[in-house]
Length: 347
Image (cartoon, rainbow, N blue to C red):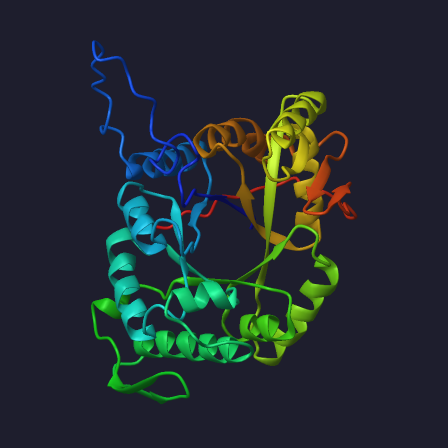
């Protein structure tokens, strides 16, 4: 089962969501009734609505210390949607595991069990300290382990006690109806030994980046998870820029590069991109976290052109090209494209 998740903006898109520069002043004889009507959540709501309408499986609200609060964004998204899963970025240092679990238990009840977690463990130390978090080094993974252990413990046990290095719980635990919904699916990231070990114990999905040694890392993760008698799905964050043909996509990527935009990642026609995604799927990736800007327009574009192509006809055509920071060239597309796609919608 392959799922596609779109990434939401955490700071608008430069023109909408009120994170960009203020609008130019209008002449005094002009009255603009639109000013202030389109608020910051309207932009996020439109992006989420686009994802649900065109058939994405979920939307990720990333943890961004300087951006909108990801759990609040996800809550609004879940309230405004019927089928879409919401993936909320979390940092183990900004809340106790019991409080995070309590908030999530209510969100699971209100949304019909459509909440996922994505933990940000390895923050830049300066960014972490600015959040009031002074835990560094390998202790961050030890704390994340305790955070997830306790969150799951209070969710599943009515009387739960845990004494750790970072958190303590005495006779805690939820009762019905808070514990009636499943614990949120856990997404984790990273390529270090500590990151893979944490995923082996707790993750449902481990999300790699384009440019990671995918085959070696997924094999390593499978082995570590097997020790705990678990299986962890492989995910991939994939910046993407797709158009009707490769020349149009390359021209748009060049235009954005000239304007100082970040690399566009996977660039090509819809058929090119579908084939590369199929190759990754054949190598075991089942969760694709797509990044495309501007968010609303590109979500509609991918949903109307790429997702149906994957669902109906499967990938075809020549492979696209991938640009990763500091490198550019064709991604490793070994394997046979996956020509099927299923949607898994929560109740």
